[in-house]
Length: 215
Image 1 (cartoon, one colour):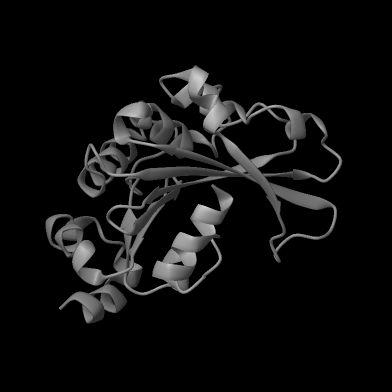
Image 2 (cartoon, rainbow, N blue to C red; image 1 turned 60 degrees about the horizontal axis):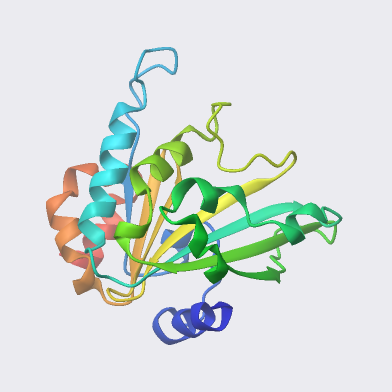
């Protein structure tokens, strides 16, 4: 599976590193505003818009039978041996058939943004849309900066980044937190419908750059 992921990245995305921020690393891409910046964190349901938008974009970008790679980068201290032996909890929570965890692939990678004491363990899970509880997964990603009890992982001193890769449509969906979501594609025509249908959601800061690509 790691070879499949790297082969896909090499073939369709010129081998770019799978790290934030994908929008600035690749063209064509879209960057959407997810949460409502006018709502206070203290308001009830302050992330309601984030849940709605992140789910709507995922539903639009992924068809039922598309081949998906559900990729999780778990970033933690080098000497955390427990994580070497146990699949990251996110897969137990958000896949519908835990017995399918035998398909979970793991590799250790080095990311240049971290020093030698930090390691990244990359988990890959091949699936279809129907195999994952994606509304719950996207919701917890939106919550990750707020100390919510529903955490992506339960490992102290760790951080998780989740990438949902549509092998069939040749696009990558990265909801990085409640603020925004990057969707990049091998061909701009693969995501033109997202540009047109959800144009009002595009982040104002990047709208001129996006318009230059799609208009």
